Length: 176
Image: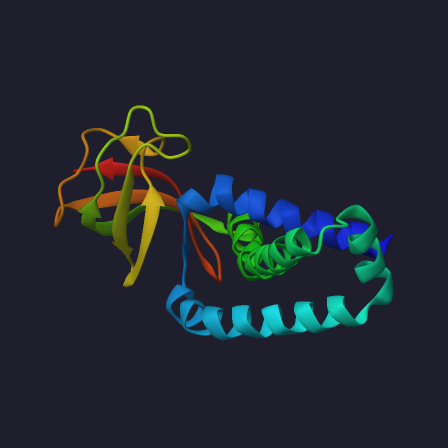
């Protein structure tokens, strides 16, 4: 039962990152990026060792995938995907925390660092921008958050956000 609950929390964290994460600027993103690769490598090792030492998992895998060369491809891919998901799932929950627990901050000054191209047929976000809000730089999706004209790089804008102890959840970007 606990495994199902853990999988639900992890998968929903990834889905939240894909949906809400486009408007979230994490205060500690620089520090998190520094430790992401070592965490990813350690998780690969832990998952690999844990799974290979678990007779039940290996027997189940051998029954489902009897061909040895297919197992040689599927097993490492599952381990890599599992480690990847575990590294990224907290970001979605951080965005939810900022959205739910943050205080509303109206008209926060921000500066546009760069603006991506608009893609009308893009799945997910049609346009990204890198903003500097309160000394913290982060990339957000501005396609559904933009009020007014698309800002130019270097332009000052204001944002409406929910500010928490871990970041800004930006709901609107206003051009000046």
